[in-house]
Each structure stands twice: as C-alpha cells, then as structure tokens.
Image (cartoon, rainbow, N blue to C red; front, top):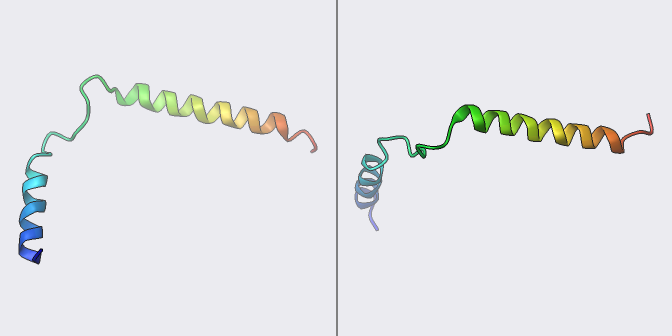
Length: 53
C-alpha cells in the first residue's frame, strides 16, 4: 500500500468521526463520579491491608 493510498484512507476514516464518537447516554459526570468512587474504594482497600505502619 502506498503512502498516498494510506493517507486517503485515513482522511475518509476521519470524516466519518466528526460527531465525537460518544454515546448519547454516556454522561461525563456519571463517568467521572464512577471513576472517583472506584479509586476511593481502591485507596480504602489499600490502606486496610497496610496496617503495619
């Protein structure tokens, strides 16, 4: 495959992704809060197992 053919394929692919690719029902606030709670849970679990201090 040539460089110009690859570039043309990438341009065609990029034109189809103008809308951002996010799902309509996916809220950034819910995703952020979920990630924050998951990290807080992991932090809590880590501190429970590290009682030697």
